[in-house]
Image (cartoon, rainbow over all chains, first blue to last red; front, side, top):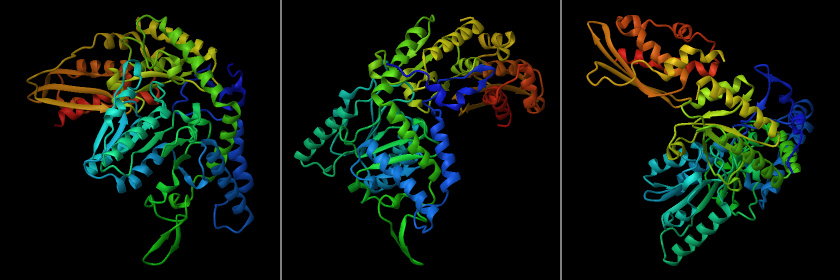
Amino acid sequence: MMFNDLKKDFPIFDRLVNGKKLVYLDSASTSQKPMVVIEAEKMFYEQMNANIHRGVHALSQEATAAYEGVREKVRAFIGAREASSVIFTRGTTESINLVASTWGEQNICSDDEIVVSALEHHSNLVPWQQLCKRKKALLKVIPLLENGILDIDALGELLGPRTKLLALTLMSNAIGTIVPIKKVVQIVRDAEAGFKNVGGKGAVGIKILVDGAQGVPHMGFDLGEMPVDFLAFSSHKMMGPTGVGVLYAKREILETMPPYQFGGDMVKAVSQTDATWNDLPHRFEAGTPNIAGVASFGAALDYVQKLGFDEILKHDRELVKYARTKLAEFPGLVLYGPEDSSLGGGIVSFNVPGVHPHDTGSILDNEGVAIRTGHHCAQPLMESLGCDSTARMSFYVYNDFLDVDATALAIQKVYDIFKV
Amino acid sequence: MDMYAENILDHYKNPRRLGRILDCTHVAYDTNPLCGDEASIFLTVKDGVIIDAAFSGKGCAISRAATSMLMEYIVGRRTQEALDISNDFVFDMIGAPLTAARVKCALLGLVVIKKAINQ
């Protein structure tokens, strides 16, 4: 089954772009927002706007309840044991940077190893690359097989007694590849047991961090099934507002982590010369957070969960299958990413031969079709695919076959204009 | 579509002065971080006059066509004339309205030409 007619829930589809009906195929960058989310943010400002925590007045208590209520909602959504393991950030990038500059600074030493994959977005590569440079640690990369599939079998070989962290995406933002995290956890835990047996120095174990920015909005995440140590994702790619992200971390790890930023709300008591830190999770949320954003993120979580992740992924894949078939009819058009739609999510990356993706993007834009063009913040991945950039269609719940048809017509215009 | 007039496509598909000058007097390279487009400019300057020019790199039709047109324009002119080229001059040369996101594509070549001369 596919979702039908969800566009009516999203006010943005009422507008025209360049005089044409909007065909929005850039949800991997950010998703559109349903009316319920927009209303929730408006409602917060109209009805209960106040700063949270420590306020004794009614509004502050209501705002606190709304904010903390969403924390509980996130806890249940990812299957975490305690709400205090859920930290609100500005987004996935900040979540990952938080881990790199606290846990990373504290635990990565010279000659330690961090493993990432060839699929990573810059936000799950550069923090580790820079940490490794600072600490004289080694960054290892899980390579790609053909069609943008990750060579998971190579992972075992890359792990060693000095491996401290595996930082891995759940779904490639550029080509849609899904990484089998459950299998990854198994491989890591098996390897770890082996290192402990030989009495290696890595007795503290290998931490697993998952960048869920792309995957979580389309697949959800169950910590019960995939017991990773850190999980980062963003509200804005799952129909919530921008400026809100989540970092989940195991409580026992959070307890050992030094503060990330200093200021209000993260302290317990402050004297002129010293301070003590607040309880979890507030210790990692210095300053006034995006309260209204968190409140409306709650509405987005309700909306997305009501649709159901099995259905969402199925919907995405139907569109990918249809789009790949349609695009394959264009002579010479190059498709990237998994050919088998069951190995990926709702993303189709392509190039028209002899035409730069920016030109493809401009011509599509003129037809009201919004795609993303460029390196998708994944330059090393582009390199391993043998290109500099691609044009990318990305789907979400409000897209339908008609959007793909409109895109195919617009791609024909690219062929006509450039006489490909 | 207006942005892709015949002359733009002509310069894109048959770029003028594409290549390198090994014994050039001025060279510069830059990228457009937005899209990763790259341009290298090679100039041979004698007595303050650009007597030879070439470019290489990768980019979209707008950036390549604009650079190609600029190459034709600057050869035979004084370096100061090249430094005086305004952004509007490039937009006029392209002749079609550019969306805000594409302005940087159009200007990459000009930026690198000026960088080369100033080195």
